[in-house]
Image (tube, rainbow, N blue to C red; front, side, top):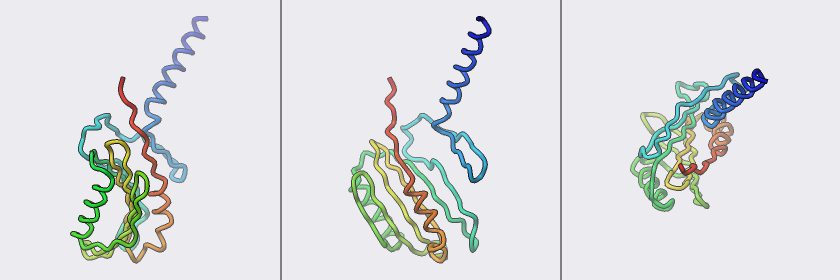
Length: 165
């Protein structure tokens, strides 16, 4: 009886430890690995890059997908106006833009640091958080890489933050 109680307690502790990290674990069957991402419960930080993923380098550039989180009380329309202003200031050409529901999709390209880059991005509003999910590739490599990059950006899902009791 005592052994059964100890086993049940240990299983409970193991399950609790596993579930405590399950929400921040990145698992990749393709790469044969998993990792618990360092996370913070501090949601007051104004912005931070959460994660970045990279394709193999091509022509001395590594195409990537990044997720940034910004705290913002701005409406999605205000965020859109600011983003379009920044793209114009950087002299980037907007190819497509769609504002629907709680998100905006952009596709744009332009020259940066002597290279022509191509982006596909989503801005997703969730409560007071805005998530910026973007894929970046060389424009010359875009056609070869866009399927994987867009699929990754489109897979993003914002989950509401649980309120502390």
